[in-house]
Image (cartoon, rainbow, N blue to C red):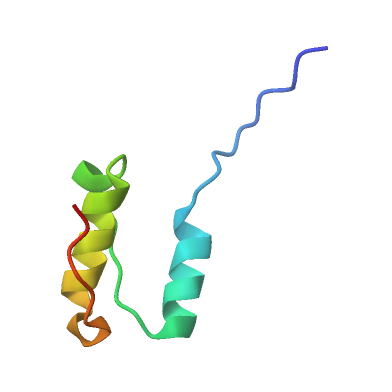
Length: 57
């Protein structure tokens, strides 16, 4: 049997936003970075300089 198509798309934004809120971090999701996890993590690090993280290469 084929799986039934879903009318709802799963989003990773909601869980990530919840974790960020609990941790007190600022996050955003620019469309250009949706499929670029390293670039997105580097952006989150720049938005939250108190983390003191290094750039991921």
